[in-house]
Image 1 (tube, one colour):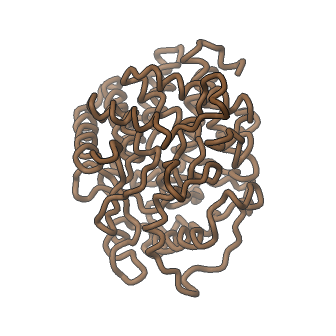
Image 2: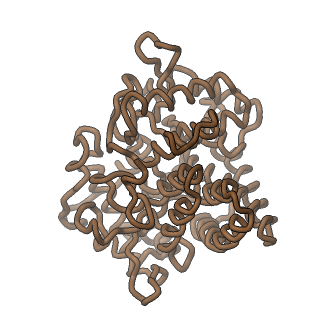
Image 3: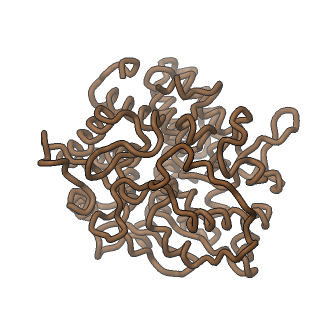
Length: 448
């Protein structure tokens, strides 16, 4: 199926709904490819970093000219060339990208690919090639998104979280006014390729577009955007310290330290930054009342109260201590996040719901508002393994095997019934099942 979604030097998430290249999708796809086609895994990440900006920003989308007009917002809408840092090809022509980022799982993916390369010399050359690109990417995040130096970077759009339509964003987006004429007319394409009932509503989408327009008005200058990027000339209205994003950065920064060590570069700066991120995730984002980590809304200067599966992501980076991890384990395995299939047949539960099942806004099959996602399950499975929590590992592993076996490689799955939702033939669902089958069961990835 990954071959089906291959487009030259990269893999799209899914035909129809997602016809371009997405950033953290390609990282997960490379992890799966590395089990049976290391050259393709390397090319997946090379093609992504080809769109890296001069200031280190790694955009969340690289646009295919062959798919022009098939996705909104497209390259003309983003108008990334407004930034002096926007990328150009070897002929000086603009490389068409978006102007925001996605969670930084890329150093982790690069290291996975190197560790599965059967040729040690080629693995070393790969790490030397990618090391400066990863350094520039992480330097951008810590320099431009963490100006106070507390080790926690901020996101400036819900799409940067990767969890686009999470109920987390209802309150901060609800504070945004979209006056008549503040955004141009547009036509959404997502509802042409997925059930409209499962997609964000129009009011939410208007606010997504407003945030893009505000960033464009600042020519994507991060300092200007922070300080005066609001519609009224005040600070940018959406700035969030996100648990999932920062957890993946802490893990990737530790992996970048290992990459630096292997290529003979300075690794200490990355170890220090990873430790600082871990320290402040615990100090600032741990919630002892809910036994989870929670986001912080910088624009409103207050913590988020809603509980989402991203609050468990620090397990992936080894951030919580043993007591915290045990408290998180109990919360994760509670009815708030793990839904049994009918009668819990075969002892399999559908895990992990992306949003608190006890909340009135929970919806088991609406985009990021409750469904099970393979990438989050994969991250949490790795985290549970780190803390040797075998029972919960088994629940997650069984869920990850059962859902695609019954419904195919879907974008997400109904947390109550297990029905597939969103895009079909979804690439990271296949890639991460390949990784699970190969690492957990020793299955030849070519047979998956």
